[in-house]
Length: 479
Image (cartoon, rainbow, N blue to C red; front, side):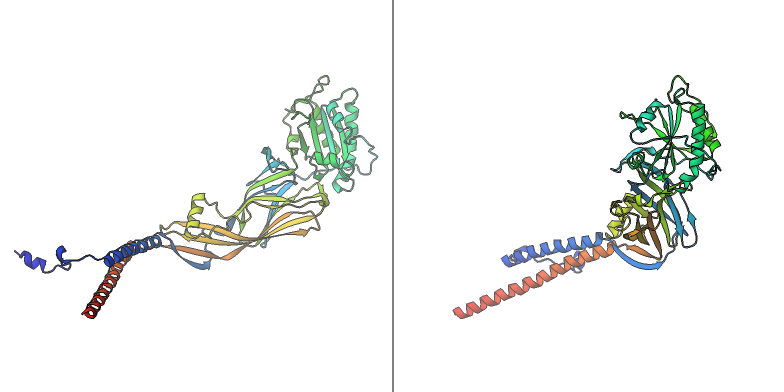
C-alpha cells in the first residue's frame, strides 16, 4: 500500500495554514477588480461563441432550379381595366409569350386599391373576331344614339340594352359600324321598341361623351356592353350589372346574339331573365369590369437570360387612346426565385443582417402619374438579379434572389406600358456559416480565469512588497 505521505507529496496545490495568512485591504480591492474582470471577459467570450461566423465567396451560378427563374408579383394598377390588362414575357433568346393567364389572377379594384369583387374571369376568346362585308352597302342608321342625358332613361325602359361604345378615329370601330347598324335595324324591325320593348341596340361616341364612357370604364374601342334590367340591379343607385361582348362582329352573328338574349324574356314582363340557353355565344361574353383599376398577382417562369416582363393593355380587335392611358401602379411585392418562409428569412437576417434587404426591393413602392400632365408615359424598372446561397452549419441550404432596382418614366411612342427589365447575373454569392468549437470556448474561459488570477496575484505581490519597502524606509528614518 502506498502511504498517505507519498500521495500528498504530488500535491500541486499545497495549502498554507489559514492562521499563517494575512488579509489586506489592497488584496481585497484587487480581488474585487479581478472578479469583475473575469465576469466581463467571460461575457465577451460567450457572446463571441454564440455569434455566427461566416465566410463569403463568389462562384459561377450552379442553381438547383436549372435554367428557369420564377418571378412572383402583386401589382395594382388603378387606371387599367382587367378587361384588357395583359401580362407578357419576352427575352433575348426570342421567347415571346403574350397575355399569360394560367398562373396569373386579376381582380377589379377601385381608386383606393381595394378589391371590389371576386377574381375577374377573362373568359375564353380563342378565335379571330370576324367582321362583316357591308362596308360598301347603304346600311343606314339603325342604332339609337345615346348620351349622358338619355342613357339612364333608355336603360330603364328596355329589358336588354346593347351598347356600342366607339371612337370615330378607331379602325375597329369603323369596321364594326356597318354590321352594327344593319343588325340594329333588323332587331328594331323584329322587336319594335314602342310595342315590344324588350331589346334595343344603341351607340355612344366616346369622343363626345367622355364622362359617360369613363363612368362605364371604357378603355378600348369598340366596347360592346350588354345591360340587363330588373333582377340584376346591383346597387341603390339603379346601376345594372352588365357584361362585355367579345364575339364575332358580322351582322348575322350580332342578330343571332340579340335574338338569344331576348328569347327568354316574355313580351309582357319586360324584365331581364338569365339566359339559360347554354349556347356557344356564352363563350364570347365576359363580365364587364366593375371598376377602372386592376390588381394583377401570380407568377411566371422565365429563362435565366436578360428579358422583360410587361403589363400592357392588349386586344386583337380593339383600339386604345394612348393619350388617355395611365399606367400608374403600386407594387405590393415583386421577387425572384422560390418563396422564402418568414422563418427562413429571419434565419438569413440573423446570419448576416444585410442579406435579404434587397429580396423584395420594390415592395410597397408607388409609381403614380397624372395623365393630364404626363401623357403617353411608360414606367420602366431595370432590375439586376443576383442569387445568394446560405449554407447553415446544420447543412441546411437557403436560397435567396436579391436585386437592385432603378426606375424611370419615359415617353411612349405607342401605347404606354409597365415594363420590368430583368438581368440575372451568371455569378452567385455563397455564404457559409462556420460553426465554433465548444472545447475552444472552454479553453478560452479557463485562460481568462487563470490569466486574470495570475495577473492579479502579480499586482498584489508588487503592491504588497512596495508598501513593506516604504514602511521599512519610514522606520529607518525614524531611528
